[in-house]
Length: 500
Image (cartoon, rainbow, N blue to C red; front, side, top):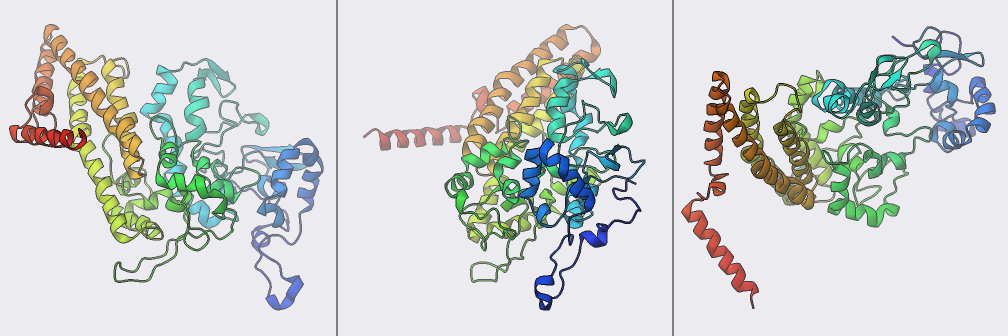
């Protein structure tokens, strides 16, 4: 196990880092949390770094760490023998400050983060997404000391920068350039800890304002497959934030919705920050206060990452996280305890009816039948992933468009729910996936291979079943007569109303 502090006597050992304030009766002698004075080692660092790295020195000088006398050495000190330790000006130093290092002072925050999906972000390195970046998009052209056989520049500069890389340490504590610099949220550090606190708390200012700003999350939560930042800015929440962000008190040490600000929420408000308890009224039951948390999954009631959404406790169980013991109903109640500070109970409950309705629509009409059709088509495909048009079509239906629809509904972004979401899902299901399945059926039969002919029959049967179902029979011009008549009546009513 890594030890960032040596056994040599240091005034800044844990006991020193977490000094309790002395009695108020001592007046000017009272010491707040932090070190009573700056260490000699940090002072020595400053002598050079304030000249060589003036912006870093300025950022640190404006931080709470500076005011607590926590400096360069307190965070970067290493012990001889640690994987990334190197000798610098007579001291053992490490470039990377890991969550294990931050936990010396921020134990609760580091523990919560370590139990979250954020800290496991680097597990994408073995996923289908990374196959795209390493093989389909990339090659092995980036040669570094740790990757003598090469690795993909698309993965290094793309996937790994959000999800995190596995840091490779070279001789003398140097870091391999394919894996550093990297502040990916799930970075695998040399001390085997997972994650990067600096992904959100940018060094060296560690600004609360920045960490609470939606753009901070937007480094990763944006783009065609998870456009949460764009959805947020489209929503009424984002509109209110842009209008009132100068009045949201985002620099406050205590930042409780309804107490310190009320005009707009940010991502942090809903997913992480504190909310007060509410007493019971005639319109609602009492609600529990929500403490600040660094496990962003504890207020989420759907995991919309897979082709078919799952409950978060299911994904936590797959990842071996303690959240497996916290059901989605509890997590939804946690979020409702935040919502109630700005919205009344009916508004909140009705929103979740709408959200669940969109999830059900996507599942029943497209995701579940689409997944079954894709699986039945596999015997008719070339065996290499993404060497078939159908691979790309189905992947984008669920990974891009289906996610956009679900995330759009979850964050009240109507344009992303519809035009960037369900419209695109339907368009590509009917105009690309169905024709490609029909082509595979014909090609399978024409192949003369018994196995492919059998697979084509099974696929044709399922496709006919799907298209003949109430969700899709309009495509075959087989809409139920009563439904067809009702739609005609409504269209005539609409035309009469607006033709005047």
